[in-house]
Image (cartoon, rainbow, N blue to C red; front, side, top):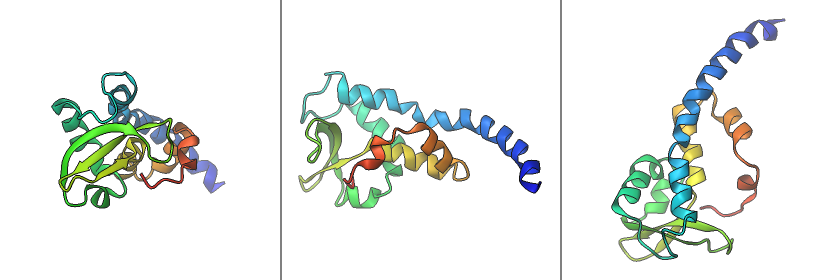
Length: 139
């Protein structure tokens, strides 16, 4: 009975929050365009506008942010994923020249978890395709 009493307010809050939760996805079409439009060839440096958007609005939410940036970021580029050869991804080119891939999906999930911790897990399970969860890579 207690469960029934609390389900209605939670449902209303979840519906309202759903609209707020979708706002972090706004960079998603832009990132997908960067990866798949043909604007960038493998190894091309991102434009200053694209690089700034990713560095400020996505990358800080990656669960392994500190590890990914290492000694510092020189620039961002696109290329083929080292394990999933038919999959393009973003790369950090560090100041020491090392290239490290990272998943923009993990960044978006991290952003949602940080800004909406109460709703994040159920939202992610509902809206993210399962194939993303099967990857073994720590990108």
